[in-house]
Image 1: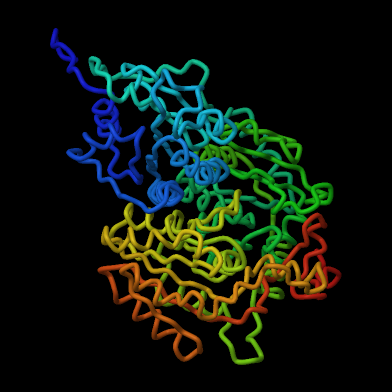
Image 2 (image 1 turned 90 degrees about the horizontal axis):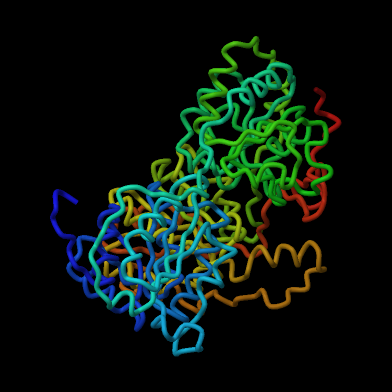
Length: 581
């Protein structure tokens, strides 16, 4: 505040919108309602673009897609009660996948809190376990500070969601607008710079190893550390595995990228981890989908575990050397530390991992009945649209095929729900990514089950001129669940048949919401509909691909079993004995 100039008197609603503008917010996704309604009046005149979604879950996932594809904080807005509780799933999703998100909710008048008033829900209590922090604001003067702190917490350290719940009377009351110039949070000081002693120790361990693997997680993408990773790989020649959340952190085309590890990972990635003598884990959390049976995971490996969140280190696998710090600084620090060491000769190890990659490529069989292969469809979408495309996926078989067969060459081009596995993520996340990247091509790879959960956001896209392209991989079933029923429940298909061959009629459904609807049922039609979709840029496009319902995701490690038991097809395993180190 310059000189003795008196602060401007603003309502809480005006203070909220002014605070969002000061934080550089470009867009917010939301739906108005009674408790949040005061905020929507100044929003009417604001430079913040508000996108009116059709369901609050769509607002949350759209904010996630915007954040994950741009690196900025995503913003979603909802009213009290059911409006706020509809945000719970995307908030939990953002928490699991470290997505910077600020969720703003209206709350009943402060005098009504705790009385079970109309549309009252204790959203602060509900979301306490799934947010980095949350606020209940009952005084108008606290709004600017709460918003500034929320954005700081969401975007620093390990990114994640922050909830700001504001009572309606706080939005309606007035007070001097005082913007805090600094954020003072004594109890929140994330460590970003790794300790030099730990980096030196890590460099020694790497220099003394003979079978090291860089186990790279989504934290490397969030930290914008892909260049530093590439530099470390170039310096050391260490093979790399990139988790589901880290696809694109190192180009798939790189000869040392073994691909995705875990339950549906490549044989090369799983084999490299299992036979390594040193795991350099950066920005990853040793989750069960990667480790399989934890006791048998990488049994001969020492572990260097670097993460910005100290709570993740040694949570699942005990680290021999912990490093707390930002992934970008850790990687650049390792490069500097290793320049002072004689690097190990990894010729034999690299030959071994390359042989795994060569002998066991991730492929698929064409259906014998002449129906479309879902893997072929996804592969062609990737080949035609190219590596600059932003891809969002739903959850299930199509997600795993997309992780394997799309061209993952660059960071922030791959969006999916990794930790929570949220069906319905794809369409709104693609919408948010398109808003954040208006000049990019954005494809959603969705399943017929997932698509039926949040496809109403196509109406939002049509009215807001958001030209996403959605591929509905229609196998008429809940594919991943059905695959488990095939393998583990004697093909007893209880409640997984969707009967969605023509009900719903997806192209007609798309057209009813203002989108273009296309369909392909034969190989000859696939390229034509993809190219036709690529030519349409003034509205959303939905392309239904009617595919074989019996296609399965391979490789696969059954839940609870060792990664050594990976199958490349049903009852077929790699011949580890033929691979000699």
